[in-house]
Length: 31
Image (cartoon, rainbow, N blue to C red; front, side, top):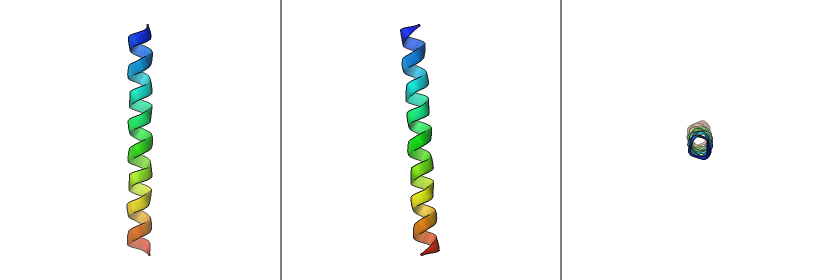
């Protein structure tokens, strides 16, 4: 149970990082 929770947290964290990176790139391209 604990291992699954850690995996889910890592996945959510990775998705959040990817989204912020994409947003930064979009802002740089739009600027």
